[in-house]
Length: 424
Image (cartoon, rainbow, N blue to C red; front, side):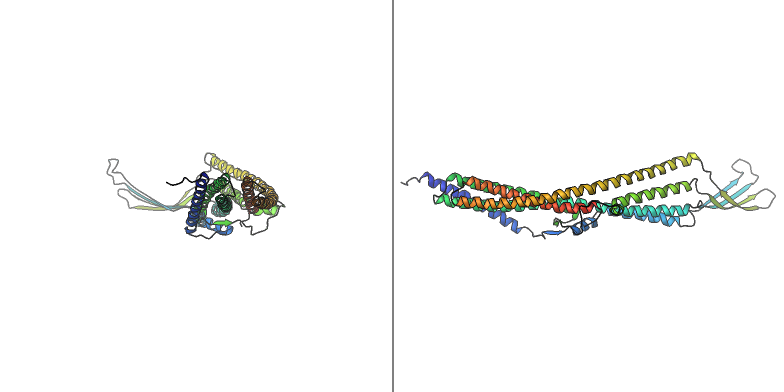
């Protein structure tokens, strides 16, 4: 008959089994991650913006709009504003029931002609539209860079969280393994070993969540950029906290687009004033008549049609053109204010990010030193295990806060460049 083993031995085996399962799960997770297809870790922010711009669907729309403006410009330089027309008529007296053989044949060839200055005004309007479309494309490029920055910041933060979770799991796993060994040799209590196992399990859950969030962030980035490589948030130019100047406002793509839109609206208003009537027409006409007992009578002449200018036709068009000009002027003023406010806000955010990054780095360094001191004290029996677990958690949280602050600082520097209208 077998002798029952003491309860302590059974608990030791249970703790050892838990530790072995934890190590097995961790090893399987690490192996699975290692077998995933390897990607380049990062790409430059400039390359990410260029890739996103190359695959932006709206670029086709801009190209189509510019093609239409170019076609209008070419039409403004043609000889006639529209196609000529050919009119003809044939009249006889048989339809009326008589049969005196009266016959009239009439043919007219006419073409519309430009109003004075209309062709040049049409070309000027088309050229202004083309310039406005190009400026709008530059503003869209800047807005896309801001969107890429938001996605890159989220992906970088998710990658930082995953790195911290990986280090935290490694530390917790090492601690759990050490506690399991101590419990087996009788140098530690069962409660400490179970607490270490639980802390390692929670760290594993945190790592799984971080992997999920990183995958989501990379997927969102891939939709816009075309690849899930996380861009490096590094500033390539000079951005200062001195604010903005008139020169900055003058070259800002958003302000340039608003100015070009105003110029296009003004050019269209001038065209509307010139086009105060429908296009006149000029042409030639031939009439051939036949009467009983006479020879054919053929005549040729010139035809001129000159429509009148009336308020019924022109007033609504002038009002619409003036409304468009006013709206463009208002939009320019609002855009100038928004750009100025955006630069000032970006300057304030950057100043706060610089202070926060310094403070977070100092806190992370000090808490990491504290974690090492508490762990050494625990090794010497001067601290309970719970203090080690707390110190680890606080130190890793501080490390993530440091990484988050550094990411925020780099993003704030890039945000200031974008606010000033500069593409990285």
